[in-house]
Length: 88
Image 1 (cartoon, rainbow, N blue to C red):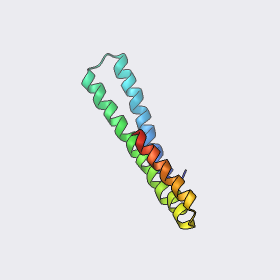
Image 2 (spheres, one colour):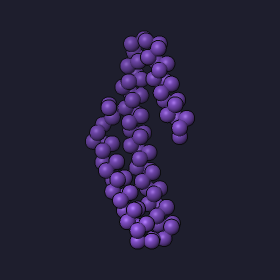
Image 3 (cartoon, one colour):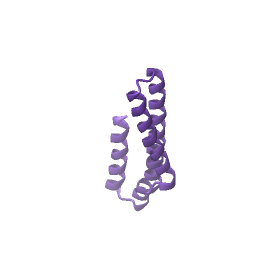
């Protein structure tokens, strides 16, 4: 993985902690909108982590594929990104 672990790991650890908090809120039968708000915060953190990983992939793996001149590698890297975006 080429992404900066110092950026990605704290985001995911925080998201994990928030998920634990959401589970506790559900156990405590908290208000739906409070739970939804916390879930949105988790989603935002995961999205930020994904963006950082994708950014590193573009600046590393994809850039390298273009610099080597290997057309098959370039197409493969682009296809990977398209498949990822299709899942969103």
